[in-house]
Length: 327
Image 1 (cartoon, rainbow, N blue to C red):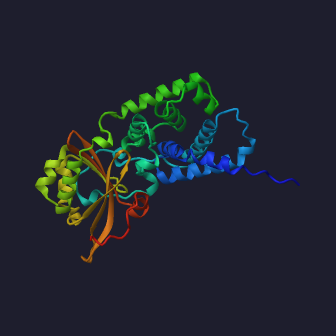
Image 2: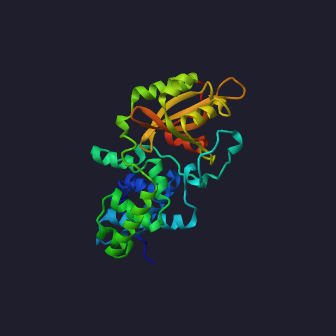
Image 3: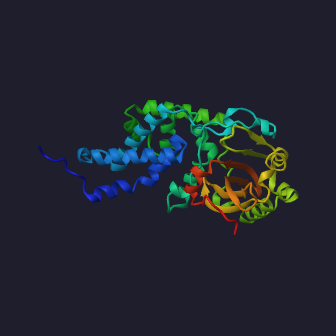
């Protein structure tokens, strides 16, 4: 029996160079950095195993995207779509009885920008960040899987309809039809592409004042920083809050245990500033990880808070320690 020829190391390096952009594609498809990592790993394994049958009739990049698309479509078929709390109904009153925990697999999860945003061309970086915003990724999950793939490939990655048709083994007319339906669906989600400024434009002074005000739990200072129409959500709870008054009623009511927290800047998440929050522990002798805060800033005001509370899962992604002395 003959032995199976193994790909040369150079081929493996060629495959590996696409990991970052494939991660961004799979994240938009699946809504979870962990699912995306699994999908990319499976894509590269399949490519490695099949590389000796790859005859170069298609570009290596296109071939990898075909594999990644098939992997993602299989994964989407086997799982529920991920969402944000806003997808489950209207805002609720800021009372503890409205807290309901849903499973981890329910939620769109955050991803560090540097896992998916390309280096180099500022315009490409801006597009990459804009199209991993939490609201955009959550909206993508409302699309049927193949429409989702078409929209990401055409609108985000700027593939030609003919290229997408070849990848999906369909017609250009079918791709254009799917793209039109996907666009119409996203329009109903009321996404404003200019609502979230580029990360570099986020007001650094404002964020510094927010950290100081939150750590002091200063009601007056926080009131001045938060837009009156701001929103807050706290996955894995399905409750979300609309309006500064309700947000602060929660913070200074049921959420008052966060008083005295320490807030640490970390890697940007989903095109937005992010912080690790550590709240005082019950013993009163230290701090425990509580939330990854992802902050939306528009026109000098904070317009949104997403507090991801599954710190054991999320903090390591952002190089945030699971133990903090407060020093």
